[in-house]
Length: 311
Image (tube, rainbow, N blue to C red; front, side, top):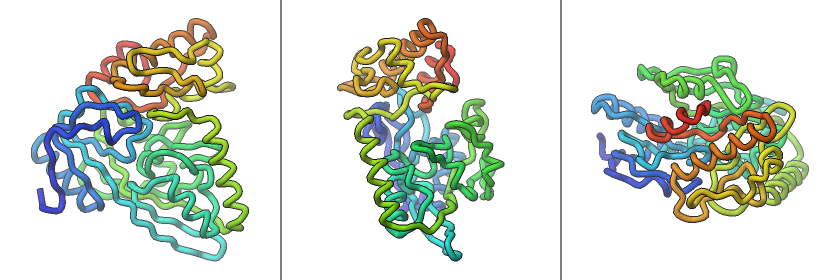
């Protein structure tokens, strides 16, 4: 490994995740450019180490056992705006924060990302899970994604190749099947010129709405996807699950589709509580909820499979 990419051993992963949960990585490095990420990928291959690329640490639950190979925290966030009249293409590194980018381009008079105000995580994670909220989603604005393939090649993928669906993509489906996963290096987003004051007002409106409904404390955001015709939060509330607790994990009183780490929560606590939530909604209301959060690590994955969950 070159001097530009420093390896750490047995690095705790909890501080890098929104839930503040997770055991150590056997090896850990930070990459700030596509070249550094490729170098890390080659090192992992040469040393027969499983590779996991970590962005903002939101929308995922890291195993209590941590990660047995190399975790790379990808921070590449270079931006380049190409303007053509009243439209523009924003090239964005996969490590760029979605919320900060949304505010920045809106202040410059470019519309298309207002929905991402307050959205936790990075562009890479948004592409992986087709992140969305407040009437917008990644699939609607992504022109193409630059992918590092399992064989080391770099390819440009269209939205059609990414096969976006509700909070999912081809990448998420490949992960679920255990197949080698391409890595998002960057993305190009479509924007439209608009009035900065109007955009600022919309950003402020979304920020206020998010603040009013988002519980305080460490969480990953929504735990379950919204089923057709309803919302997971409403169903979980109807099932009387607000305040339910397992260990240090508790269903938020403010929004029942959030699990809060109220202190010392483990991944096992969260998984047990999520299973109680899922099974109670199924028993009482006849609706099967599907996890939105991504579960990382062998022991966590096995636990979910034992509970019949779909990753």
